[in-house]
View 1 (cartoon, rainbow, N blue to C red):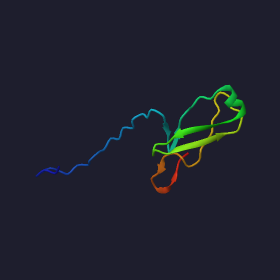
View 2 (cartoon, helix red, strand yellow):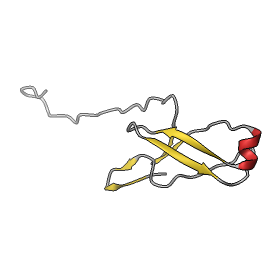
View 3 (cartoon, rainbow, N blue to C red):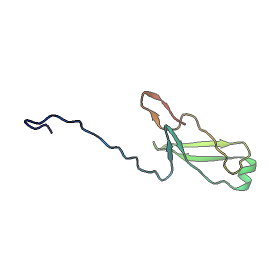
View 4 (cartoon, rainbow, N blue to C red):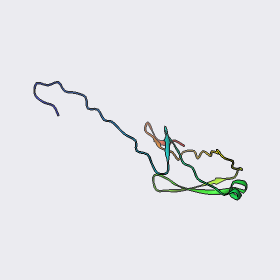
Length: 89
């Protein structure tokens, strides 16, 4: 609030990002992990992922999965502020 005989000052907001139970954020990208059985890792599977906006995305895994395997799902991450129709991965 402004007061008489005092200079107006800047208002500073501190935004603290809280950790999420399922996702970890890396810029505009979201990361999560899941476990698959040995049979699914070798023969392929479909992984179901609940999104932040309440949708359920089915992700087909057709490659052989080994420890540390990463699969990128394009366009399902955080919305990019300056490009409203674009999302991270």
